[in-house]
Image (cartoon, rainbow, N blue to C red):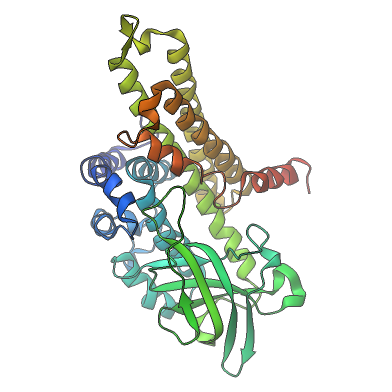
Length: 382
């Protein structure tokens, strides 16, 4: 794989980050999955590398905005090394941090971004609900005005970092009659009266990234905790999710690339009928197809990231990148597992973990059906 569109400085940054992922984070991936708790050790190292600060203002502890290609390739490297670490850190510095970075007040940025980007705060993104996943307009969580604040009631489910977060951005309806125009965004801190965090859910994959619920029972939040104006929450969610979809595409590429590396190494060493498996055309062609799909997904994802950085909007390309890369990731891990046979199915090899993690990619940040719907809307000019 070639690292293209990088100047010398970016290439040096990527080389250092690749080494960190290869030498420190990847060797802990199996341990991270088995522990089933937030990967604090990896989180601390990512703070030191500047990764957590990507896309955030240097005035609040960020490391600035990297080139789109560098951003995608760094996310890919981390996803390949440990998908659980990628998801946990992405939910914190990305999904939690970006709405505050883009739409928050100076006081909110100072209060939350500084500790977040220093690795002293874990964040969560409270959007999905038990009966309202991708259908944001169907959310039931409400924020009713009460004096100088709001009373928050409802439940969020399948929230990354929910069991361990120190703070969460939470979407709630301030005007239930206004559909998506009645959604607003609030910041809630751990320990606030009426706010509770559910235990970790038992999941197929991403076991090293705790996922759970956020429950609000008459939780009072001051008006100063509202991010931006009332009724702007849906737009904030969609803007943030475009970054999230590009991120899931990069993660998918990383998982697929890690599987391809494992499969390539295995078929060169494993012999059958007197020759390496790599000499069998059926095996070689299967892995060649994966390599081609990975390169296609990478190019599309970088293009989406370029449009997002240049124009502030990449709705259709972000959906295309997420759709193609996530479904490709599932095919790639499944193919490598098949090529490796029983060993691919064994927990002694990382492919089993990669295959479990891959299955979330076409579901999270908007399922494949949602991405196809968004692409179709643009296709038909709706």
